[in-house]
Length: 65
Image (cartoon, rainbow, N blue to C red; front, top):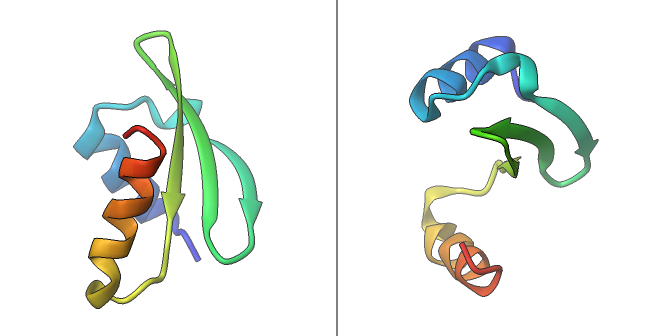
């Protein structure tokens, strides 16, 4: 579960106004949308183990990130 502390940390790390975070869904991942500099973004929190980092990077690459 994503805590307020994690959202605060994410906000600080990425320079995002926390008030722009909008919860979308909670299934395997917790998904939020947010705005930064007038653009829309998606933020996904995942509980995947560190060993799966290459799979996550491959997903991001396939999505054009």
